[in-house]
Image 1 (cartoon, helix red, strand yellow):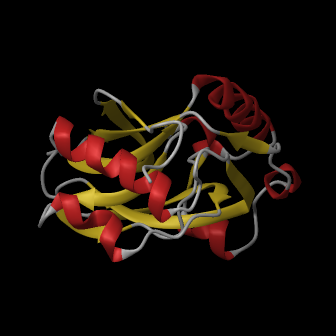
Image 2 (cartoon, helix red, strand yellow):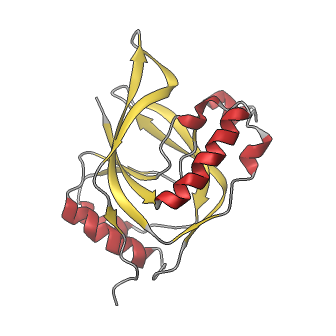
Amino acid sequence: MANTFLTLVPHRDVRLLLRTWSASLFAAGLPGAWSFPWVAPLAALSRPLHGEELKRLAHNLRECANLHGGPFKAGPPDIAAFSIGASNVTTDVFGPALGIELSDDFFEPCGDAVLCRLLPPVIGTALLQTAAKNNGSLPASASSPPEISFRAAALANMSCRPLLSGGVWDGYSFEWKIGMPRWLPKTARH
């Protein structure tokens, strides 16, 4: 069974920087560096959001984050925990943290579709096993992500499910599909 998430999808030019950083993390020995799409999961959903809901959220994001047409800026890397799969296996997404705080008003157009918010918002560049997180076995390159700044972004549904081998999940392998993106307006409504 697949889980559904509301995700912030940075413009593809930024995803090229993230892809390069994921490659360096993988080369430095972080096995989960290719296991997550370069998006920021914002909330777990009980159902995919409809186009109009995503459109309203895209407008709300410009207003709630006080961006008003300015860029998103990613800071130091952080970790966000989330659950996937029918057994709700918890895993950690690692990547540059987005300096945005989303109020309860932001999620209002979703109604009861939001199961939980994922904090902090991070752009996924790797999945971490609990051992890597707890014993500090992250490579040195993990502490220095590229400078990430972008104005163009979209909101989209993302479904994912773990890929099982003999009924067991390895903690890294899953398939995902990102739905039709709804681009954020260039500026907030006034």
